[in-house]
Length: 415
Image (cartoon, rainbow, N blue to C red; front, side, top):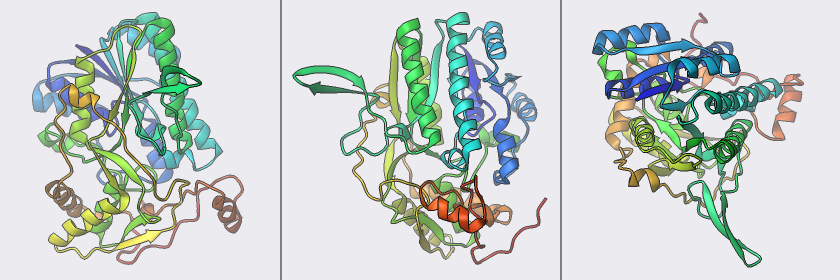
């Protein structure tokens, strides 16, 4: 198949490109490298430097003899998007090309607007380009379980059957997003659903949980094929952050009581879920949702797992509870269905002691590169941000003053 990967330079995009290339598909990646610019702007670079896309493509060719095409293009430029689809004629598009961080979207007005403008406009351009250039192409769109929020009822896969005043219907599941980033994903879902219904496009919306891990069969083929490992308060996720903190010898920082529950999955399962979606396309006019995760954990459970495994490596690790910078339920019901991908053949790689130990060992080898000052949260979601801004003498941004360093290491020299 000819597969176009939007956002193919990213944490998931690049491993997906290698994975599908190795399985015989003709793959081209599209990226405008905005994420790399945001990382530099906010001084939240990955633990290890990530090679430029051109160097990655060359390294892939050298390691496997296979070719991955690359195009630099901004999805917010409709003419460019339309031209890429016209030239490549894809059978499937995998759409990762969005600003991926909830904290980024809550920092200030500018970044909230950037998030929604980039994400919603880019996806709309893709939909119009599909309509005009490739109406039979299958759009596989990366959504998020965060669209649902944490309702006090079971979460279905995209749609729910309801009865109201004696009548029944199947309707999109109600959404309660928790940030301007998650809101952008909700708008995407609505736009894609509409386009499928009106233009007879076909799309799979992958409502993904939190992904962990950095190693796949393909990244192991060479050091230039790695993907990014973020542990910071903007682009990092909980498990990555805990592993970095354990490796650096500083407390694992849990937001609030840590009873927030979320769905998680291994990066290897993300790749397989995307492949299964591509190989089993929906019918023309069909919009479907797969809830893409394999296990659920509370944040405190994750921290406790890392603490136990770090102890086995001789690391003395403590858990520290911080005031939660986010506006979210401190404790809640969470039961989300995730059956459709299992029915298609997904065999999950469940989080195990072995994997956490492997991640810890890998991060520990590069612990000297960890920038501790980027770990603690500095973005406040709610009304507390007003007092924090006033104390800092700021007026527009919800970015708090840089927190004091945790004990254990001095500030690294700025480069």
